[in-house]
Length: 374
Image 1: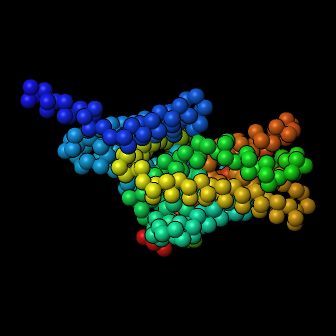
Image 2 (image 1 turned 60 degrees about the vertical axis):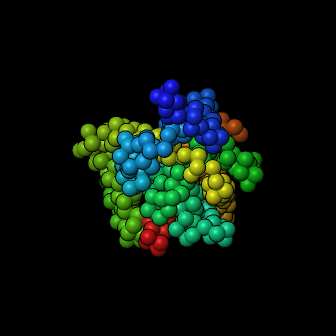
Image 3 (image 1 turned 90 degrees about the horizontal axis):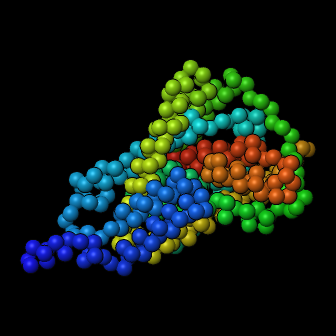
């Protein structure tokens, strides 16, 4: 009976708390959104399963969780808290991304920059409600809608908030099709949404090769701390555009980014233990992250309308919403929203320009915060 009693004490049933049940339910919700609604399934499914695994109750002393030194999950999580996985994902994103849209429309950089207002506005808001400067910077970057950048910055400045920040960033990335359309409808008229843009000029091979090199140099001189992310992004793109490293580009854009994404998302999910996650601070992070994302979309749209005051050839202001760096989901949302008004209005390529500009902008913003607060 004594042995049987000890066995029962080691089970999850004996160690379960209400917080564990709540978080396991959250994990199921994320998996449901990934499978049934197809909201960023490559991200939400491993995160959701990680949330479930991370909240299985167990007896104290067992080396199981990501926080128990010596456990297998602890070493997987090391790639997150040390900031190793995000640059690998940026390498893959670079190998997958076509910068031709941005090269052919340099003015779109301004739209990507305008969307970064959400980052700095939320930074000020987080400071105002009592977060430290380091924590506020990590929270603010959620507005860039860039999960790897949010994780990288929080791992450097606020590792104690890494779990809530990562979940918030990836959740809002997945909910781009839900969050952005109401704002787009509110800030644009039917006539503005109907604006058709001229086909962009085709970027030359030479321009496509030089672009990642130039971007890496400019970003490094503006914010040296951004080179970890921007450098890997540009390296991946150079591998793709050079035409002489197809094997490396293929690996970076497929196997490498897939492996890094699985491990990062699962580990982040597994880090959301109830006692660390269900707190007023975590709820505040979700609220501020949502606010940051809304402000970023808001300013991207407004700046596009402002640019039209000076442009002879008007741009469709909807593309300003793609200034957040949720690539390519935000650009796809712009395309789908525009086609509801006019099925012949194709904005995807035009929206990709501010979209990839937003990726660069949020990474530079992260570099600035690291330089100031590290």
